[in-house]
Image 1 (spheres, one colour):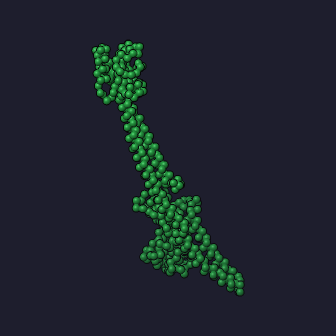
Image 2 (tube, one colour):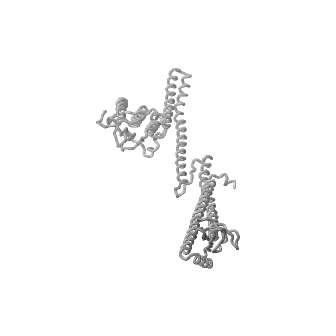
Image 3 (cartoon, helix red, strand yellow):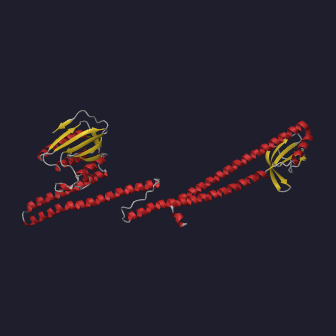
Length: 455
């Protein structure tokens, strides 16, 4: 019993049962009242028709024919058991056997005394036959009361049966709700206990509980992915910081026994590398949290892409590579210009860093439907197919490129910036080469009037 009182599932089930029982009772009362009114009106119609018939006989045959008609009717074995009485002005009963005093005119309930039952009630119609004589036609209400008692008994039995059935259904419903909720709670307790791979049970019916469980499972998958990413980030930070810190220690040791100024300069350079690493990590965290969204403005993407290509071209040429660009003018988006520039620079640096000398890097900006697509493509060796899904994660690097500078955060930042702007970063092996494309929703008023090319 205590379990039922403390269980929200059983409370819901029993409240539903209470509403069901109350509604059933109200319905029964309404039906009973309607039937009582209908039967009463039927009685009123019967005594009114009978009274009118006797009035007509009185007017056509006089008092004698009326008396004879009353005698015949009282002698019959009619199931309605109608009673008659004709009263003089002084209250005496002239004809009939209705055991009651002279009543007033109209349709009414009259109390009388039954020889076998004692005090009783009848439904009666009272009319004047003449200025001196008054006719009463009444019908005993016993048969109506008998019918109503039968109706009450039948309804009571049906009501009790329906309540028992409803109570059993409420117990079943409460047990079902409690069982479904317990399965979710039990899984949650297991997850709290450390079993992060535990999931909520999802049934085959896809009802609301199954939808809730599926939603929670997707949330848990996301949390597990974030935790896995956190473990990876922690491991990669430790791995990538160990080398520069070890170098920094060696420089300081050599400085302590030799040229201190040169050692300090090298140490400062190593510390700058570490600080830039943490700055990149913090920048990615800010972007993923959406903290920079309040700085969004309309950005001329065509002008930005052209500016970056022109400023980046000399650096690419120094590295014995070629940068070509093709930019459609008049393309604008809503976003953070600084973040977009950083993302595009990362794509260009990634292409420059991971291609051999003599490679060609192409930057293009085009309109595709409602999107603005900026693509950086090269004709280098590309990326192993198995590494494509993971290279946008923090510190993710292809094994063949472990010796190149960087910490594996460039594509991660570009991916975060694209998602912040409700776009996406698509990476693809072009055979030969590799392409990275950022798709962003463009402003509807962007227009394309020509194309700017450079090399």
